[in-house]
Length: 82
Image 1 (cartoon, rainbow, N blue to C red):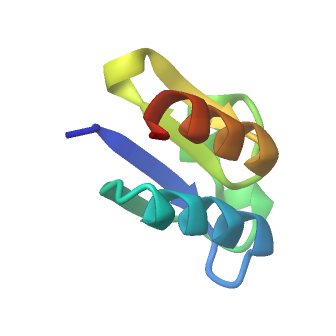
Image 2 (cartoon, one colour):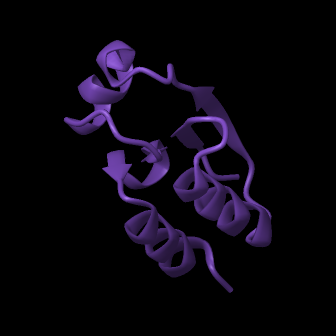
Image 3 (tube, rainbow, N blue to C red):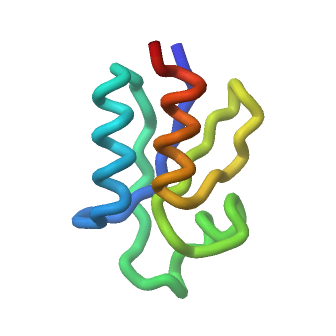
């Protein structure tokens, strides 16, 4: 069982792309909804160094805060794909 966390924003198309891939791969994850205001996303900034979402954390594989939906989707396919 993967130990995944996703920092996301409701209605974010980039987040939706990552969630779709997580669902396709049958991966469970913990969702963290972030505030709409970038100025209030201190937790995301601490983890990834920036305030954009989505951000993936995969503690089992040493991923402390991966930004960029395309990078996350590629990582998920390479790491958890069949």
